[in-house]
Image 1 (cartoon, rainbow, N blue to C red):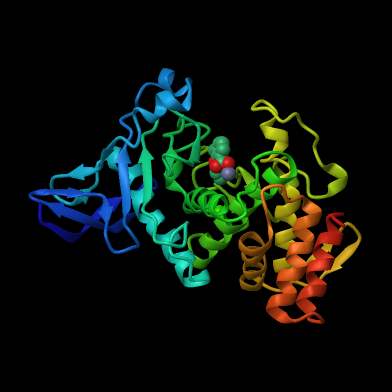
Image 2: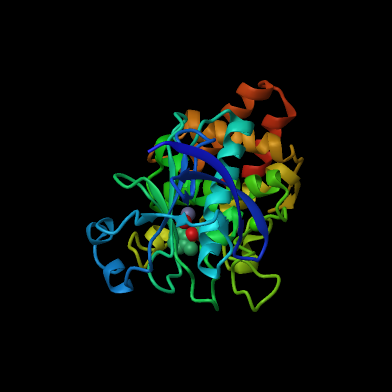
Length: 337
Ligand SMILES: Cc1cccc(C(=O)O)c1OC(=O)C1CC1
Ligand SMILES: [Ca+2]
Ligand SMILES: [Zn+2]
């Protein structure tokens, strides 16, 4: 049928109203943004029963992506709409971040459609990037106590889309040190994207949707990972089994060491007996992006990340630049040689 780009309005998880790029087909409006790459598509997971989610991905795949979000009047203001509004709007902002900062056209740099399913499961405390063959994001609604709906936080959506970028570039194995780098990249670009968008800039992850009744906390801190129990130095690397229960060797925990490195490289500071001269967020982002997309591989270790970052800083600013020295200082400060 003939499609018309249209602009609707919606209310997000936190009650904020925003404009949405929608697609008008007949008298129905869909959460399909035709203005970015091959499009941004937001689907309704219809809270398919949790029981199915606990089975294999194969079971889940039968239900994903769900139904393309539709609305009768292009005003998405019901409470059931909130999660879809934010998933759609923030995915567009993450697309803009990568295009403007790194000239990257979507996660595959070829304009790939960005697909998200909200209302995934029931009270599901989880969000994630589902790689091949689905190549989409999914957001649980949270249980309302530990989590609000996961698409309600821009840094979370940027975190998930960065997993897709990582999969298409270094493809860091999601386990042990390579997995911790994978996780840290998602946290680092989650925070940088949020700061770029001016959406409550901070060095925290998930603060807008984490424990709504407890102010001031977050899932993770990059400035001080120890605030939420994560290590900020190699001396405190947590050895965990490479199993689901062991967080695949602690990928969401040991990421704190790399997160701290990025924070120090950007902002500077004294840590581990070392003084780091900061290079600022933009330069830190360029160094980590070049490392991720030009030098890291599936099995890269923390030490190989250090080499990649030193080489990236050399490429970008010159062998004898202060930025190269700052990279060395930052990795020294967390005990990565
Ligand atoms: C909540 C959650 C559970 C499991 C994996 C992830 C994951 O995407 O690694 C996850 O989402 C996050 O970590 C985002 C930052 C809040
Ligand atoms: Ca944040
Ligand atoms: Zn992650």
